[in-house]
Image (cartoon, rainbow, N blue to C red; front, side, top):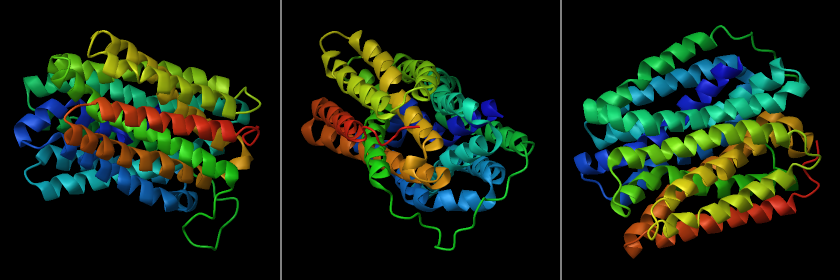
Length: 379
């Protein structure tokens, strides 16, 4: 079950990595400014952030298996529209569909883990399934630029459709959904989060802001400012993904052992704030961009997995389904805000320095929230 959940996570988030890895090709063919690339990403994750406010309750009603099947079918539809392209309306509709899938993927996969795995296996399972996102990043960075050069970027995106449909068919064979333990009558929106949950939401917003900006603009920065080729620039996303895979699995296991989950959360956000400083430094010494990609994959990417361990294992953040949805809303809110703000700063200043400073500030906000959660996230 867990490998399939990891696949679902990777496919639901794949649009972000696809737009980032194919950024130079998209800008060249469509003739769009750099800021619009961030706006396209912001649309998908803005929709995901808003919808995440109610997806926890919907998932509780539908069950994890049915929700996972539905979101995988939605991913297939989104990439079919992206591959067809042709006009802005179709592109926007595809990104909206991708946002719907993203909003449901954390509540669905967390619900399946909570329902079907014993507590002692849950932290490790969360780490593995969250690493699916970075497997997607690795696949996008390594394969999509090569496929786009050999075929076209539309054909490269079309190859995602049969993969998503195959995963949906496999999801139908997962264990049957359990009925919800209790039925809420207060509507679809979650209740007001407690203090610990609010800090974790803002923490996730900061991490999401930095990660989405990196995934969207790092290849373009390497291509335009560092003079790297399109394949090498796309490979940076793959490096970020490989480091993130190992880090998410490792830190999710470690996070489950900490008496206070705020400790690893603070450490990871602090490390990310340090590693992002290597990006502007790469303008002087280019290899530093690779070190920065590895470091950010090992820190910022892992932070999201540890936050999901927190909501699955600790009742202090609220019921699992709704806490997952609220934290996802903060994370996806950062994914919507980050690329939009980064693109505007880059175009407004004529360089990438202000964008890197914005990412560093976002990670520091997460550090502050992690420290203020001290004692709230005890298992």
